[in-house]
Each structure stands twice: as structure tokens, then as C-alpha cells.
Image 1 (cartoon, rainbow, N blue to C red):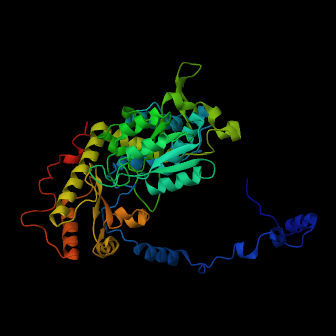
Image 2: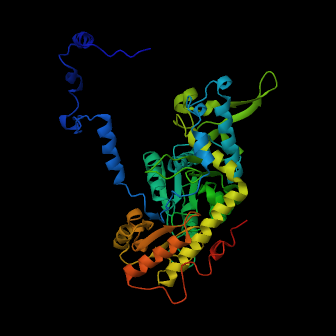
Image 3: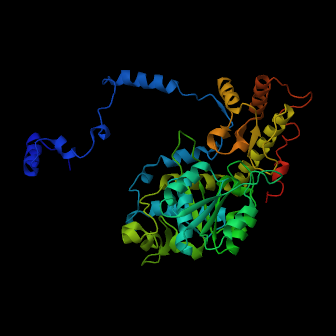
Length: 479
């Protein structure tokens, strides 16, 4: 029906009934400094002039930078079929398929996503999706508390700092959240300190609900996930693995090392990085915890005629059924992005996904070799996949100068981890299958000029590492 706004007479009648003389009087209790003020917007423009103005604004964006930035969001080639199929009109329907008889297509797409991700992470149940990896991780932490009836969660300091901030927001006002320190030196530097973790798990009268660790961790390093999980289970806690989905093509899945819950960011699965979103939260668990997982679950059954049918299942967990007793207050999900991930995985297949992961690892090894040739060393010596930190004096200034030369040279770790002096001179660099050897050589040359060094004679970026094989550091992880 057409929308008819209130007339002046309507407003006057309502104000008279309330005993007020103006609409502003409704908001007298709000301090003036907190009230919304008129927006300082330019005057309206004709469409042609507005389009030209928007083009000028868009031209200020830097789209020509060669990127070595990862830190939780990664560039990958996406088959054209992904974006093309997402444009089909049948996907732009009601966000939640409450009527299965008219929503079989949407329900099947969610079911396929759940099935593909369950195979990838090696766990039994996957939710229909969450807002992003940070939200999924926070929901995983709450799951551990509900399942164990404990209120303390331990999170490795090597988990993404944004995830830890989200955990503090979700848990900080009602649960206890403690950081597990990292190993300071040696081969295991930059990974979760197992000794400190064991001590925290065995503190008297402070039982732990769950332990959260990331693989690979924020610094790109591979964690001893089986050892972390064993310590958690020995203390009666649940183990949450925060994973990067593409890496699971070559690394052991969470189910293989005993994780009870897996969470992660699904953006690398066919979703382009673009100004902070949209993202796709992955959350998976075992059959034993299926009643604790929040969000939609789609199951397959048969109808009265014996035909295959898809329906939302175990609805009693959700807020529209049980309100304050629901597993979570999540109201919607990222079903369109889950569909993108499904198309990406189905198009590439397991061998294609492995090529993507191994290709990024090979390019990262080339990058490490090129940087080492001009004297730039890694911050840590442990194994990594396709992302690692290097030590560069004056890292922030060097990063700015590289932007001027056309390179987005990773992340300044002092900005991401300001309270960690061990990474004060660190840059976190990433390579994927989209990183070209020529781009690596250009970055090495630019760094050599900025730092006043030159590549060693006969050594080029990637020398000895450009044959497509995963780097030495990954040799024990490739399946």
C-alpha cells in the first residue's frame, strides 16, 4: 500500500492529546549537546553534475597499488561464475526462508554451503553463516560457556586483535576473558606459549570453559593446535580453532586435531576485499554441541509425496522461538555470501583449492628469499603458510614511502599490536596466487633503494623458490 505521511493536522492532533506544544518537546530529556544536528551537506545537484562529482571522488581512490596486505582479508582470484550467478534475481528474496514450500532454492543453497564447509573443516555441523569471522569467534566462545557451565575463556594473543576486541565486547561484561601469552624467543617465538596455557588451565578455583587459538595465527605462524587442544581437554575445557578456510586445503582441518568448534572468516572464498565488507562468518561444531550452535540450520528430509525437501531444523534454539532462552540473538545471516563461497568451492574443487593455497605459499617463499637477499629478515623463525612478519627499522615510515612508490606493503604491526614491543619494527606481509614474481622483484628493488641496500650479486627475488613447490616451512603440513 502507498505510504501516507502524517499531515500537519495529524501531528497537531497527536500533540494536543499528549499535552505538548511541539515535536521538540518530546525530546526535552535529551541534553542539547547529544541531539542530532542538521547535516552539513552540499546543495542538491542535477543528476549529470552529481555523477561527475562522484567520479571525481572515486578517482581519489588508489586502485593501482600492488598489494602485499593480508592480516585477515585476502586477495584471491574468483571464477567469473561466482559474481554472475550471484546476480540472478531468485537469490534476492526474503532473507530468512520461513516458508519452505516456497523457498526450496534458498534452503538448498544454504544446505550445500553447510555441506561443503563441513567437509572443509572436518566437523559435523555448520551454521548457515554469521556476520563475520570475529562475530563467529565470539559466538564460539559463548558456546563453550553454555556447554560447560563455566564463565572463563582463554584466548591466545596470536588471535587477530580485532577478534579479541570483539570477544571483549561480547564477553567482557558478563564473562571472564584472559589472554594467553606468546613464546618470546626461539623456534616457537610468536606462537601460543603452551607452558603458560597449562598454568592458566590448572589455576585452582578458576575453571576454564574454552580455549581459543588461530591457525595460521595473526602473525602468519603455524600453531601447535593438537597440543593446545589436548591441554584444553585435559582441563575439561572446549577447544575453539579460528581458521582461514583456503589454508585448509593444505593444513589439517580442525576436526583432525580434536577441535570442538571451528570459527573463521569466509571472505577468501570468492568474496573480494572492499573497504571492510561484506564478510562471512563461519561457525562449525560437532554433533555433541549441535544444540548450542547459534544461527540457522538447514536439513534435508522428504515430504508427504516422498520427494526430497529442505527445511530449517532445530528451530527451538533460535530467538524467534524461545526469545531470551535462545542460543543467540542473531536474527539474520550472510546467506548471499555463503552462496558465493559455495559457488567458489564447487567451481574450484578440492584440487583447485589446494593449488590456490600452495600457490600462495610458493609466492610467499619467493618473497622471503628476495627480502633476505637485501638483508631483511623475518621476525620469527617458525613455519608459516603465505604470510609472515619481517623486521624493518622505521617500519611505519618505510611503509609510507612504499605507498608513494605504488606498494601496499602489508600491515604495520605497531598499529595492530601497539602493546607488543617485540613487533614494534615489524611489517606483516602476505602473498597469494595473485602475487606475481615481477611484483615481488619490484618490491624488493624499492625496499633496497629506500634502505640503501642492493640485492646480493646473482640473487633475485624468489631464487630457488619459484618452482611452484610449497616452502620448506610448509613441508610437514601439506597433505
